[in-house]
Length: 180
Image 1 (spheres, rainbow, N blue to C red):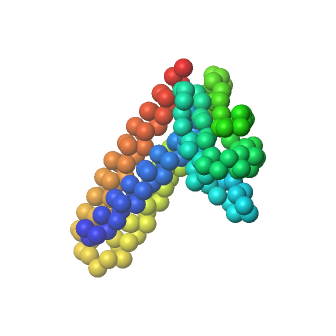
Image 2 (cartoon, rainbow, N blue to C red):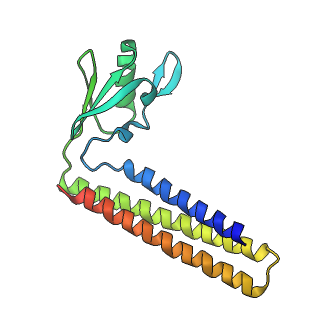
Image 3 (cartoon, rainbow, N blue to C red):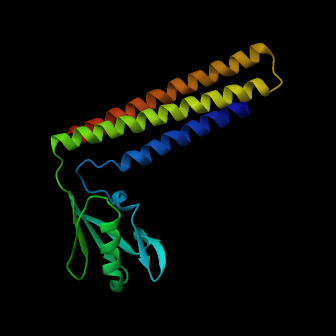
């Protein structure tokens, strides 16, 4: 029974980590290198993640600077950024590629808040699925009815705890998105 509860908590923790990763992909008008995580570059015939080909730094609050290790791949990096549909236009000066993050309009901010709420709801659905799966697992164990009930109550306490965490993280992300 303890194994079941530990496994439940581990899976719920993973759902929260997944939510945090998805939240980092929702821009807040500030430069964040994780924006470039989906960018893969065709480097000598193989698709390579951008962060393996260049240093990515933040010289200003709304600017990313990409300095390739190999200057011959500048064009390929530029092309990959264009094709990745991340909504940023690369500026190549021969040494580095600069990406300027545009300021968010009120309408864009509201759209990003909607996206964040959807991600939070998806995380809560994942938590509910974990609860359902683990409740089913508890019934399969050779336990007394009281032990099964106790186990299900413990799982419900875990889901309540993790739903609160999702709400807190959503609240923080909304404040971040709506602050000018």
